[in-house]
Length: 282
Image 1 (cartoon, rainbow, N blue to C red):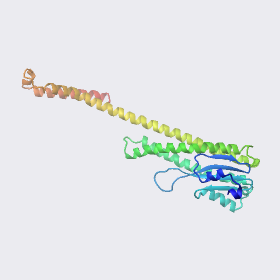
Image 2 (tube, helix red, strand yellow):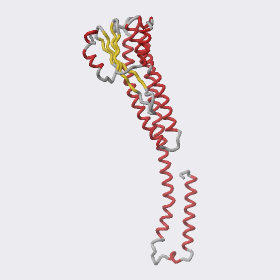
Image 3 (cartoon, rainbow, N blue to C red):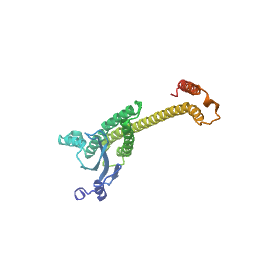
Image 4 (spheres, rainbow, N blue to C red):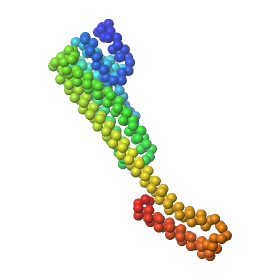
């Protein structure tokens, strides 16, 4: 590609190395862009977003795309080119816009799938009385989804800025009539970025609500344990006191002492149990 198109050697190296963020560089005779396609696995319970790098060169009369695996979005662009679509074939900038638009359009269903996943997590964590293995798995999924959204935000936000820059007069390879299309891509990315932020806030709210519920359950369990300990404390004291077996303890020789202690213990137990039930601690 260096010999045919005169591409900068650094951009060639970028094509064969993994980039982490979108990129837009102007080399005079061509623009070099790095963008990313999102995808979900067709099989498997765990829906983790797959990210594929797409490197794009835009020249005066050509567009070159480099990607590591086939992408359905770019296949649709090729079909339009083979069909000699009037808009796509009118300029290289329009071809680049069509590629960018197809890739960004592919982000929307991914966001919808992640939103559904967030709703499933919310239902699993906030609608169960007790934690089980399924809920524990959902906790891990919650934190994994938050990390995925962080990665997607780091990609979408700078890509939105790059598209906004291409809609301005700074890049001569983008004709005036084509700039509005790149602005449309920028607006689309802005909606996706807003969706990501909304979903992150939603997940943060789910996490906070779940932690509050867990803390409340722990407090309730501690209250019950405290009430049970309080009930048995005087019972243990009385039985321990009369279990010392000193000869000078007159109650030890009382004929009905054993039955009297049983009555006292039963009375204390009943009174304390009634009290704590009235206080809703048991």
